[in-house]
Image 1 (tube, rainbow, N blue to C red):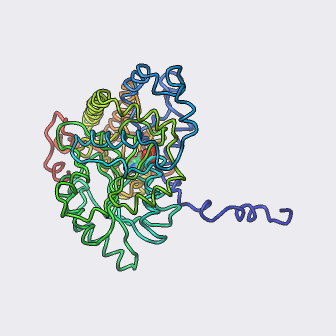
Image 2: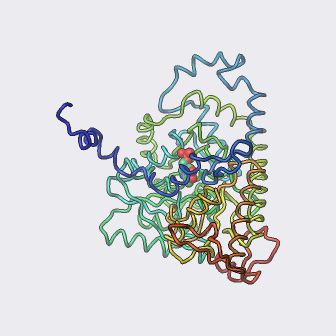
Image 3: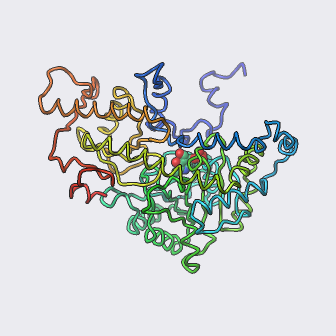
Length: 492
Ligand SMILES: Cc1ncc(COP(=O)(O)O)c(C=O)c1O
């Protein structure tokens, strides 16, 4: 110890894995969170602080959950009514999980899918949230250096979850706004061929349905195309369906991969299909760390179950969740009320943006909108996107996430989370966005002598926003009071 050169010695004391950048926390996605943490908005104590719109949390229905907890004190082991279960719950833990927990989760997955698609509790393997489930499935399917294809834009955490400790790599399947970022057979083939040419073994395709960050759902044809693609190439399909109950409105509805493979048994080798699920988004419980791998492959279930010892769900949480999800009446009410509230929030927000000509990709799922600010970039580049993002964080004081952190192929898109705050905060966020855009318009109509807020000191950023023809400004939201322009329609 005494002989160790302190700076290099300190580094050498830790593993390469622990000290490398695989956690991906250096991206703007996480930088935005840090900016929020330094100066968090609070309506009464810090009204000029940063509003957190980078966190995909579902906080719209906690009143329903709290009411259920009050009415069901026996579900908790910390109440007089439930304390008798304390000892059994405290001592029990093996990697199979409580049977009643797996039964309840399997049933809930079926309810979310409107009874289409059956789930067998014995295929459920527990993990610490979807985060742990992704790593678990990656460990099961891929060796170090193997590739997993993933359509862009995708959730930034995937780089960490599927790759950091496993050594697997993600290869992008490039999608763009010309068809609303839909994944096509051509894009899948192109990514696959590129990997082959680079001598990289492709083990799986990872899809997120409904999508984070797009908030869109995959249609039946696309899902069937995907299934036939992975079947032909004999690679696995990992389907992240953790936003399945965040779909609102009547159309398009959510179609699970389970439905596709059940309606046509011949379409695919079921051993290749694996669903990732968690209660973090659908119920709004990311803190409970309830995630699962649901695999149709017996061998994967067996291996994953052994590995799951590293990331089990606590038996106390299993106990509570199994009671909650076994209450059919509550679950039905929660699912329908949550969808209604998400729809209202989505409408309020997209209508508010439309008033200043900001468009969003048409969507009916998720806890966010995919906002197009490409018209505010000084040039069509990711550098310009980062500059604009810095201004939004530092001056407009909103933590939104730039498209580049989702590996988006086109600059100018931003993900804005809308379900992690109350209505008054949404109004304040909209007010700030409107003020920002209007200031930009005025600057172009009558060039200001003074430096405007978006003319950043060190980046020389200038907004090129100007009033265009009215129809050119209208958004893609189905709720827009003003008709969409042909230009806009072509891009969805
Ligand atoms: C698509 C997707 N998958 C996985 C996760 C991780 O979820 P969990 O909190 O269950 O680990 C997230 C979180 O935002 C996500 O958006």
